[in-house]
Length: 143
Image (cartoon, rainbow, N blue to C red):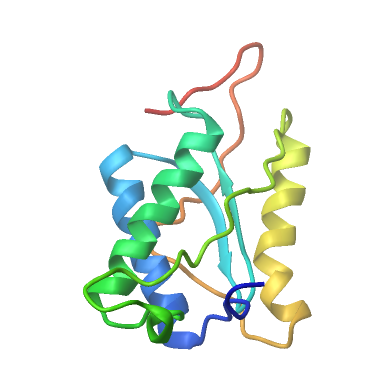
């Protein structure tokens, strides 16, 4: 590895969340759950006109801009003069498509409880919307 693994502290996690919230407003995503942990993040997001991969990339970009603007980038010490620090996000992401109320509710519960499994408090993010169920009979796209 060229750089040490990224581990977010509390202030960095808050900056990541602020970036996620900004992108949610800009792109009008519906985010049903979010947890930002030291070594990874989980989100449950409604379908959108953007692909899941594009949504994730936009969220990563917004959170990176936010963390840079706050001067909290975890790899700042590795930046070359007059250049940005190395990327703090992996290139890939794990995307799982959920197709039922039950699957979405299970994913939301998993994401909400994830900090507890790591001995951390539950997280509440202002950009998270309560899940109220899917419309039956067709795919739901939020825009």
